[in-house]
Amino acid sequence: MRSILFSLLLVFYSALPAQQSTLPIPPAPAIAARAYLLLDFNSEQLLVAQNPQQRVEPASLTKLMTAYLTFTAVKQKRIRPDQVVPVSERAWRAEGSRMFIEPRKPVTVDELIHGMIVQSGNDACIALAEAIAGSEETFAQMMNREAQRLGLKNTQFVNATGLPHPQHYSTAHDLALLAAAIIRDFPEYYPLYSQKEYHYNNITQANRNRLLWTDPAVDGMKTGYTENAGYCLITSARRGDRRLLSVVLGTASEAVRAAESQKLLNYGFQFYDGVRLYSSNQPAATLQVFKGSANSVKAGFLTDLHLALPKGQSQKLNATIESLQPLLAPISVGQRVGTMKLTLDGKPFRELPVVALENVPLAGILGRGWDTLRLLFR
Figure 1: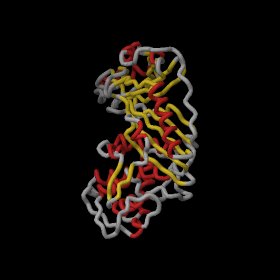
Figure 2 (figure 1 turned 90 degrees about the horizontal axis):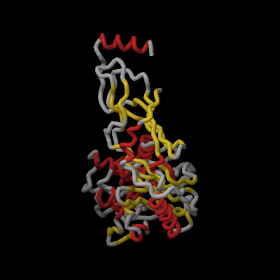
Figure 3 (figure 1 turned 90 degrees about the vertical axis):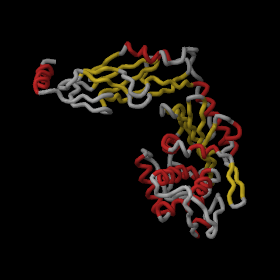
């Protein structure tokens, strides 16, 4: 691989916040939970983590996957928001939190979605699972297939509700990925997670996420509780262009899960900056190409490249790009052509794939022959 150190990094330094201080940031606060993490949404960086891969009982955080599959079914027109769903005996008699649907009372998909998200209704989840897959068991198989597709490597679902089962588990890391996927893939449904209450069947129930009332930056996501799981909370908060996701699992009470989540969010917003280094399709480098109709290819990122950096440390960021030499045509847009290696204050920080931003077709026979000779004598 050929390493290229770019003086052109000055281009993205203009996008970095001015250096405010060279003091190191303080350590993350102590969090009274079995497992927890703080994720910067735009950069997908973990800012804080404790036991992020430890298997835990996810309780009602399971309903994030039930929601993901429901949103997918609506988007694919396999169900409609105004569709009336029959309520089975199993859904009606669901244990735990409920929205209080009844077998002889019509209920729509849209109402069930609200009951699942705002009221955390187990009955709503079962009714949706049966409407989409025919049975909750078949729906659980769909949940596991979707978990694999989303890269949730340490997650397994047995039901749509999160009721306890020995083979029903996840991790803080996987749950953060799932929450981020909902925000990314279904922005039209995400605002439901900020709804503070929902009224159905003459009963009004409040959202159990206390931070919706106490922090104006918080706009979701999901609470969970069982005796074994403890009190759990995934929270998303946005300030300006930045969004942070906190996952707190296994706390002692509703008040503690809210307070510990707030600690993580405050820490991330106070001591880290969000930086966009490159816009989508902005060339980061021009790399040499052999046997192509062009002698070079523009390389960069197909989506905006964001980083979360400790405050006051942005000017200590440096980058090199290692090209996958020799680069041989044909080259297609999106094909990996190198690696960007970032260091912060001289220490390895991140490695990111760099891709082609344009196609480079094969050269004619003479051009290919000439480059063959050039490669022989490199």
